[in-house]
Length: 570
Image (cartoon, rainbow, N blue to C red):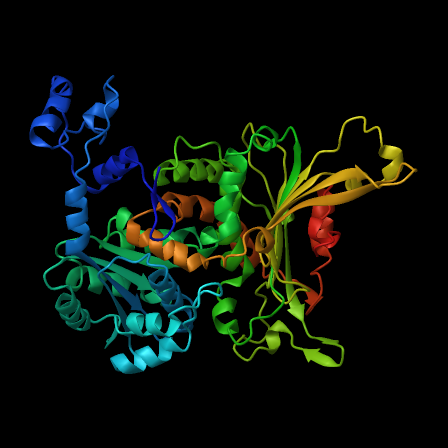
């Protein structure tokens, strides 16, 4: 693998490069006799003949010659191309707090192309200077790299422009197209649209942008933010509507949790460490827990949240995507399609979630330390009498040879006692444990546990049993701890930085394919419909507590104890 020294990213190998090109471009099939002529053609004329699978002919031949790469042409293409990034919904909170700062961070790290332009597009009337003043307040430099920070900010802001328009107006997008062309003059134009807008106007924007503001000479890609519908039907309708104007390869469905450092490290931890891969199955793992909690409520966003609830907002996307990465079989390669194929296999092997395996809750008002904490329905943006769950716990199962019978427990909630996102892997008890007398009757205390803490304070730790120093035989549970802040003092990039850079580079590994989305919705749609049709009341829990008691009964049903309740890191 080659390394991109500009931003410390690994570039594709030559084989991966050709595979990517084959997917983007139509490649003429080579006949069998052409195999014999492939190397001679390279030597004489400097071009590479390709077979129907997109690989250079010398890759499939028996010779060990390196594939031909015209580096001068690649450099020339880089110089003569430009990337225009349009943030649709530029005046919104997501754009101001996440997208523009992530773009600046990429610019600061020299990870963006040499020629790029950023445009904001929204209905709000702003000038270029007003946009720059607005986003300039949110830009920060790396904690460990402060030199020339002000200069870099100014250079970035001078590449930021604004165009006001309606989201459903082809004329307004045509005006945007003219402004983009003014900045792209003389260069091959590539265009990336980031839809930081409500899902009900996705299709209008995509229709207008694809018809009047697509790149005439390069690629056009669209990043779509969740939620991707409310159920299988609405998600399918959205996908079909988007595909009337875009191909699947142009659609980048973003789930920012897949861009988090510890989630991306999940496959590295498993597939590159011999100590873990043999244990990664029902034979050694007793249960897997995926835990997401926030220590704050809806905080004025109740109107949006009430339309979706915690299952749609967190479980159906963030946690299911992490589960699929955790449980998938070894992919053929690190190619995006190979990884996504394995994730889809996991999702299709999972049982449809049943109501008996779900607990829902909603936080209520609570007074603590003289401070009054509001209930969910106290939020003025939430409809009175709302039954929307702010907490959910669920037990899921994967019916395949590797994971048969292993419960995958999820829980997610707002207004809980702590903020965390983590994966907890509890291993089986040691057969015939010689030291069971030292641990007493509670064998859970002696259970090995692997914890991958996604946020905050990123860490990986393994709970093991060991002897306490001294003359007596006293045992203790300790943690072998990799705390990222200690081992890697350099600031960890935000998830949006990684995902934006991947979209610019055409890397789809961390984005969601349409069949992944269909399979994920198929798991949750029936139980969501049942919850809403039967108007099942959520169990109330106090703001700032550990959540509803029903979650503990659900775990006990499968002989599981939630690991975050007894952890010293709780």
